Length: 510
Ligand SMILES: Cc1cc2nc3c(=O)[nH]c(=O)nc-3n(C[C@H](O)[C@H](O)[C@H](O)COP(=O)(O)OP(=O)(O)OC[C@H]3O[C@@H](n4cnc5c(N)ncnc54)[C@H](O)[C@@H]3O)c2cc1C
Image 1 (tube, rainbow, N blue to C red):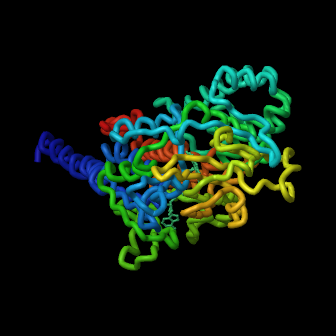
Image 2: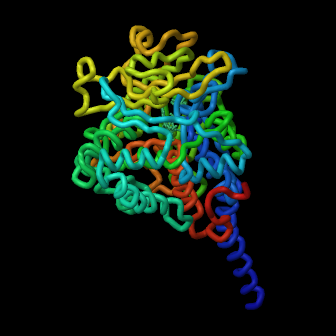
Image 3: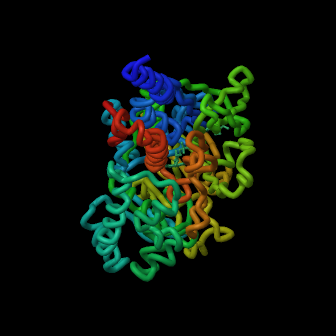
């Protein structure tokens, strides 16, 4: 064999033994679908599937399974038919409103062609301390503004210019080029919210706006939104509640429709309703190249869908409500948060305005009770309800009222509040975390297991960690987007970066 043939022979060997295995690795990366389990079909779980499908799924084959223990999509976003009669329309039982700066919810309703509606009939707000209305709207905005200045001084004028930069800072979270966050302290720090989340609303805002404005206006918003008083919840939660005043929307057919549609538009996604995940076990596999591959085995209430192995698991439910045994997490209790119970009572009937010392003509249509320290006029210093809102008047003249309270509304309370009722529907939610001020190190983790530098493949993510910062439908879709970005950045590693479609805004071609 002359030297020329020898050269070609070695070159041939080099191609076969050096090039082909590299191609095989890429081939494997590109063709073997990555498997992703999403536990929970609410705002967080459904949106995560959607963002992953539009981004990672456009570049790398993925197979997703959404496990949902209920027979419906939406989680804490769901509607009930008024008086159990669908022809009378539906009313939101859980998450009711979103605001114009909730870009994901607004975009989704527009892109999916879902009509919006203003949530309540023209409302007149009244702040009730058990004896009188401390403040009430007249319906004339100029007169109302004068009344506010009379009562609260310059605070109502100063407040919007204080709030706006905080909202603007928060909105930078939508910037496409913003890298994903892997811890909550990272994002709280980036958004410059640390001071707002580690102090109560009272402590942070009273010196700025005075106690009357904080105890009446700001606290009414925080009680209306989160059922929690300004001396309990962190200042950021109170400020988010105040931003709900900028126009509140809901979907005509129910907000849950967005979450159904997110799933409907997610490719290669299997939805398993009525399937509760019971446990997650960590397992390792050794691949052809002797690499240790982290995977997770999911056990569910349906034995026929057991034994599925996943690269990634996304827990999209509060940990304590999910009730899942996750053996690879040493102390899952660490990640749990205490949730505030909200009792929702829906009533069709005739409210009795004399309860508030008023007539039908001058009683406010949306009433929020005062909290600490303005509780002396309530029995046991506890208001019987947090909010009382008339949503609509039926053709027969009955009002449809929604009440929130922290304990169940008794029949006796209803008898005092209504002349008569024809329908009462009660539901108790573990609604949102008790939004106590939080120090940096107390935040729950977003990555519960795996997915670090030494582990190139699997991991468990916790979408509901974000609820400790703030709990809304919108922010849960943002958390879904963030998790999709973390996975994208991890899987679209340098070797695949060029073949990966850019993440963009996550909406893909929708
Ligand atoms: C009364 C009330 C009023 C609210 N008002 C508003 C509002 O006006 N605006 C707003 O934006 N937000 C509001 N919220 C908050 C909002 O509902 C939540 O922030 C948001 O809906 C949470 O979405 P999620 O997907 O993270 O969780 P969830 O909606 O709780 O979804 C979790 C899902 O996981 C499922 N699941 C749990 N465990 C398992 C398991 N082991 N296996 C399989 N599936 C499981 C559950 O069935 C559920 O469907 C309100 C909430 C309540 C309760």
